[in-house]
Image (cartoon, rainbow, N blue to C red; front, side, top):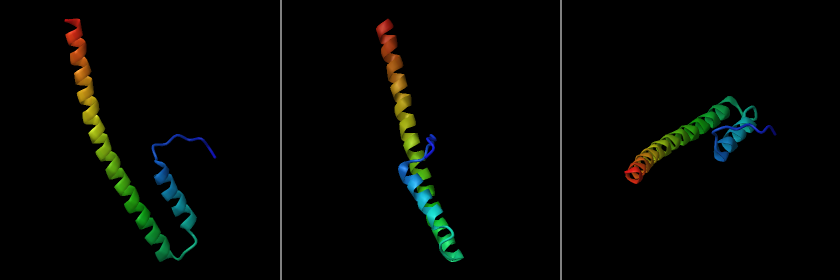
Length: 76
């Protein structure tokens, strides 16, 4: 397998691989259904990633401010 770096989690990759295996094995309705289920899962994953990003963004902002204040106090 190629060693490609992505931002996908193992769970994301697993779902996409399962989708690729399912396509072509069922009728059109089955394929559309599987695509819809995969799309819903990936949309939930995106939402969770955005929430985690927002949480971490606040954390790093506060951490940077705190470190800056500590440096100023040390220099005084």
